[in-house]
Image (cartoon, rainbow, N blue to C red; front, side, top):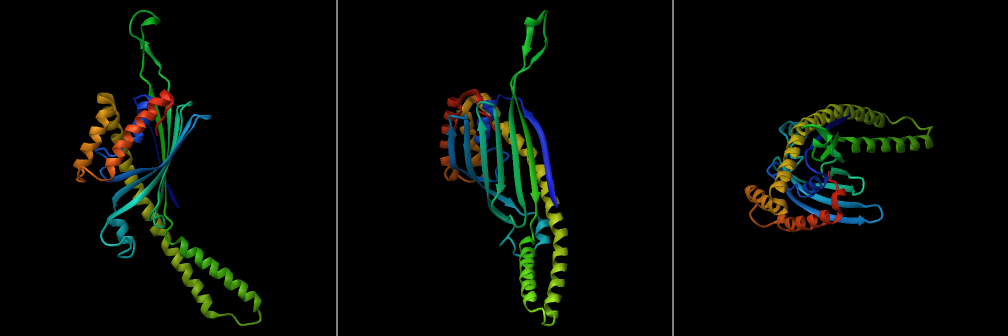
Amino acid sequence: MVKFYAASYAYDYSFPAVALAYFLRYPNPYSTHVLSTDVVDRSFDPATGRLHTTRLHLKRSKIPAAVQHLLPRGFFGNGSQTQSYILETSTVDVREGRMETVSRNLEWTGVLSVMEKQVYRRVAPLAAAPVGDGLASRAVLPERTEVESAVTLKSRLGEARRLKRRRDAAAAAAAEDQRAAEPEDEGSAKQGGGGFWKTWSTIPIQRSIELIAFRRTEGSQPKAKEGMKVVLERLRQGGIVAVLDGMSKDHLQAGRGSHGPWKEQLSQGADAMVTVQHEGDGFLDS
């Protein structure tokens, strides 16, 4: 069974501003669980006008008590606090004003695999209703950026064991064909039946894990949106300097001191600003 979460919304900010805010969104007051961000690869194709970026986020998370009760004790090690890496890939089409991103977890995928896909689109400004006499007095609404987000949640708990049993069963069947004259091995038949019951018992656990993750996603997605708004407002008020100052303050308030993984990230933020200004208004964010 697979759970899906989908949401659509818009930011009342221009496309370049949302793009920049996306790449500078960590840290912010709503993402204190994000410990660091590293750019793994980045390239720009002048022929297509597309920017390709791969980043790695290290996040701290707390395993829900309900999930811990479903799995053997010690499954996640000592305690309920864990750290996991999130791989994020993005493609920005600077000509079309469109960006697509895909984020997925790299750890605990056997328990739960999470994939988030987002599409950001630039919306052309529209003329508002007349504010005076004649068409010349029509006001122009600010540019907006629309977002479509989809999250897929799938638990694969027990699938590796089931696949192994299937391979073992296929190998046993092939061996049985070679010695068809020999009597049936009752022990093997009993083992197969036991496998059926084990397979049956993992299905409710998978569904429970997916449901718990779905509810957490419902709560975390609005917070991610609010975090973006904080960064966008900092850009509006004081530009890139205000964003970097805010990132430093958020880092300190998270209790991680004035140095560490984010120190390098702050300098990378300034480089990202140069990239956006160089590419112009076609730069999109996700």
